[in-house]
Amino acid sequence: MSSYVCVKCGGTDCEVAELRGAGGLMSSVLDVSTRKFKTVSCERCGYTEFYRADLSDGAKLFDFLAG
Image 1: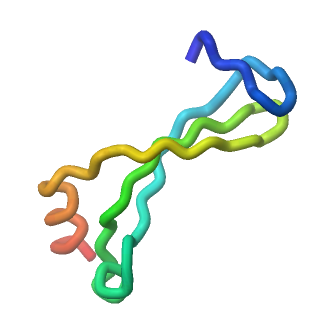
Image 2: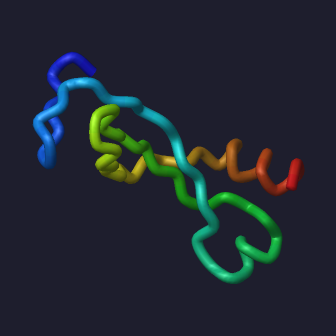
Image 3: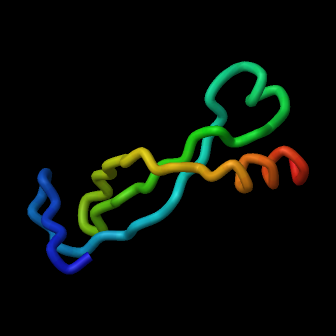
């Protein structure tokens, strides 16, 4: 990300990653990811922002079958 500037420390280097999580009791019990987020973490101070991302039906099915 070339235009990234951390709101906490002013750092300009970041790491972008993906995080998945269960959205409720049944998805948690069945170990199925129903939520997906993109994370942007400052390399200098560790401050992290989360952005909601779409999880396709195919990815949900794969998580269910592989779980």
